[in-house]
Image (cartoon, rainbow, N blue to C red; front, top):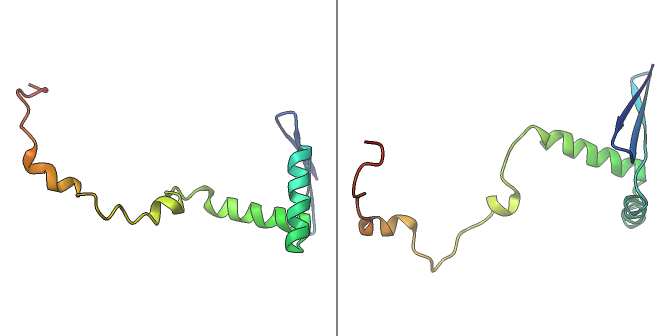
Length: 99
């Protein structure tokens, strides 16, 4: 079986299913191709291995909404008073906005 999916003009995906393996032809722009080639040379991995790794990571996290690591690891600002410390200074509303 061969499936052809097109997304935008720069990408074309051709899927061939045989013996439990899915083969893709992925067309990327020159800049992405050069970056992929450079990273492959730096890591010693093949371009295909890098693409498989990236695809696995993306699929594993795609349906799990979460804050980015930089937000999750934020410890706060030490010398900044907490929000709750200002509650006693809040004034009640002049009139009920829902009344």
